[in-house]
Length: 498
Ligand SMILES: Nc1ncnc2c1ncn2[C@@H]1O[C@H](COP(=O)(O)OP(=O)(O)O)[C@@H](O)[C@H]1O
Ligand SMILES: [Mg+2]
Image (cartoon, rainbow, N blue to C red; front, side, top):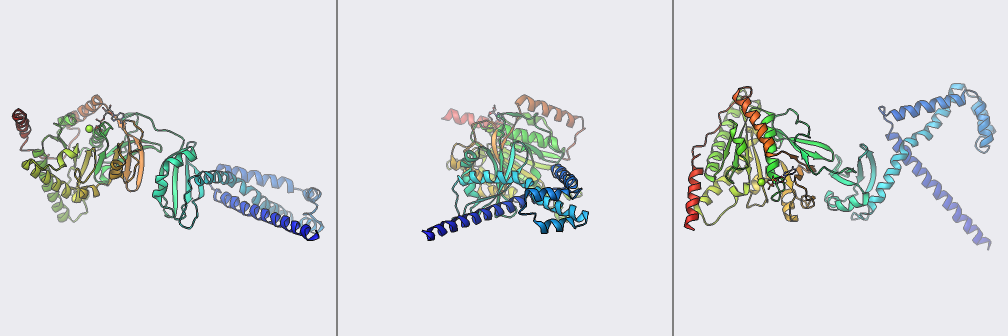
């Protein structure tokens, strides 16, 4: 009987100690979070500090305060402590209370984040992600970027980035927020999640978005949950645009070309549009743009561009500079744009002349994509599907930026992005995933109507005519430019035969 009584007491005491232990660890956790939130620029911190100091000053102004404390907490403020405190000089007495209050006030700065961390930890536990040793991801920091956006940083405990990416839709439901971006932190043990409560617009006009910054070859990617996104082709140096028909490739392609043309006058463009040049027709009126409509012309131009690349390398070598941008002799940047690139590159078996052309085009594109960065030559390829048949894998490896619109299949998305993000996009025209490095951003790309494009190009064309805009030139002339007609006739005869 007595034994069980003492046993119960024992358990109770243990529980009390456990409780105190938990409280102390929690206190220190909140305290450290508070310390991390002590920021010189934080007005909240300064307000609280000044108020606390004033408050402590007021209550310690007379030693009477200690008498009140002795009445309220007789156990703590016994004779010994009271006498010690009263016999201190006032300034030490004041500082003692100030330091003590600091331990009460600092945790106030961390308590909100602590609550947030607990909340997000609960949500992450929903995912039931586990490392090999059974440990689960730990939320370690929650940063409120603004009223709609939060960044959550977790310690991954050995669970790979792709595991989180594959659970993105679960995460969205668990958090009740859209997961905008998942990326490794500088220290790859940690992973950062950008979350938002906002949704992307379903259509955004080219003109609603800000102008691109004045850097050559820059263009608009569109609106992401993080705001306006732009890019410069100079750093990529090549770009791919993919996605199912009707997703918005051609519109994106054209608005990109327009922005690039507007971003610098020293640019030449060779636009290969093998669907008879209908998409690219409006660009034809510019003196620094050539539109190419047949495979023969395409190969001829690619060949000349390769010669131009070699000529540029000779200049680079002779002047001992690292790229054409730093050379003394100024040269135009060259953009090779190919809409419906698969038409040019997809191998055929039957037609032997066509087969040769295609092989030649593939070879030339490979060489251009490999070396052209320093020579200031950039490729933009638009294609529905990306397979090794449509775009050579060697070319794919040299592409630094990809815009992928909705894909009907998982494989389609996977070949472009290496994940299923483009397959999971909503069925919204102009909605795409921009991928560069290991960063993936969902964007609503700018919409530019055909009339708007023609208007803009007319302005540029007039500026070139008036010589207020000058490119360095000369552009490569296409000798076979009549072949397009010949081919039309040829195709016509072909049909007759059939
Ligand atoms: N960014 C956009 N925003 C809204 N609608 C768009 C956008 N891009 C394209 N569209 C619509 O989708 C249609 C098909 O676009 P297009 O660029 O021709 O697709 P693709 O080249 O991928 O087949 C366009 O006629 C246009 O009405
Ligand atoms: Mg198209």
